[in-house]
Image (cartoon, rainbow, N blue to C red; front, side, top):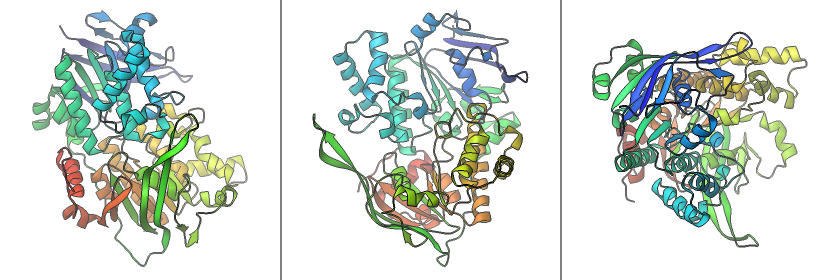
Amino acid sequence: MSLLQIENLGVRFHAEDGGIDAVHSASLEIGKGETVALVGESGSGKSVTALSVLQLLPYPRASHPRGSVRFGGEELLGAKADRMRALRGGRISMIFQEPMTSLNPLHSIEKQISETLILHRGLDKAQARTRTVELLRQVGLPNVEERLDAWPHQLSGGQRQRVMIAMALANEPDLLIADEPTTALDVTVQAQILQLLKDLQQQLGMAILLITHDLGIVRHMADRVYVMKDGNIVEHNAVRALFSDPQHDYTKLLINAEPSGNPPAIDQRAPLVIETRDLKVHFPILRGLLRRTVGHVKAVDGISLEVRAGQTLGVVGESGSGKSTLGQALLRLLPSDGPIKFEERDVQGWKERDLRPLRRQIQIVFQDPFSSLSPRMSAFQIIEEGLRVHGIGATHAERRQRVADSLHEVGLDASSMDRFPHEFSGGQRQRIAIARAMILEPRFVVLDEPTSALDKTVQAQIIELLLSLQRKHELAYLFISHDLKVVRAMASEVIVMKDGLVVERGPTERLFDAPQKDYTRALLSAALEGKALDWEE
């Protein structure tokens, strides 16, 4: 008997205009110890199908007009709340796609993992702490004892995802639903996490429902694959058969999708937009009752760079290498030491009131659009906010027209501007985040993993959008990513970071074709050939 059986599942979201069918008909099954992948583009209904298993959809706004979900022969659709609480985190666990919105910002890492151990296993605090340390070491979190008291915002995206994985595996579930489990992780950590999941699966006999847009992961992890499009399962087969002989045109499109682009050529005559010399960002380590400083975390430790108009500087490295910290320091969102020159003006010592007019010209697009867009504001309000802050647009009607033009520029229908973030797909949310930045006509934009949460076909669209906006407005980009294929499509030059330092830099093609450092070679091997990181300096 199958461990999980989903038959003819339908999911409808109700609204004043009658509602939307997010899933029309989904049927799949998973056996004990088996890994089944559910793949498809953003908005195809993958996550909605998975959330239906644990009854985590926003009921009664969401409903199931048809179908059945059985776990171990037990029907879960319509199950009572106390029964579902017993299953969630116990026999069925889930790794969510967006860890920043899934982790509680008011609780420490230790408290969040310990909670599930105390509730489901009845451990006391000391036992839960010991098990928490063990779990965090298993998922490769560095300096575990120092991280126990950390808050989610103090961790990098990859570190937060590792915490989510530790929470999901804490009670050794029978079924693990992994919704884009490696989206926020660099390729080297991806290999470690996927191997960890495989090892634990063998130890525990655990079944995995893997939801992903990364077909490379599917090829290495799954036994069988279901392909989903527009709320329907369009193809199902064993992994080897599906990749060697796909039947549906949509499956062929997914398999052949690869990020591509033509980054601007290096032009040393272009005007400098932003530059820094020996930039440092050191975070104090506090200990004891009086919280005395006993050392520093050197997140950025003496980096120099420059970005010219119409050019893109790529920044690559493992999770926790300091990439995002570097970008935020350049935008003066974090305190730092060292000159930061924007169009030849050193803005390092400027006070916030002096920086405010400059904010219009320096913008950022964050990695996770769901957590960076306010859930209480419509797309119009989110994009309009910058116009209001900077006094652009004399009337509401004028601002609304500017927002409509901006949405059109990023490939969204202006009629959707009054919808809220949760009513858009991941790719659409990222387009809204880009529109929010671009509507102010900036000169310099930090793009912090802007495509990591997107499937390959949408990645290609976003890359082309960013390149076209760059050509049109002569924008300078700092492009931060762990996806080296995307960096190759976007960046003219690349710097490679490790532990807050630049280990190598150079023109993109030269660095990709003839890397000089062992670490860079290992990083490229992991990214382009799927090999785990193995290097020595």
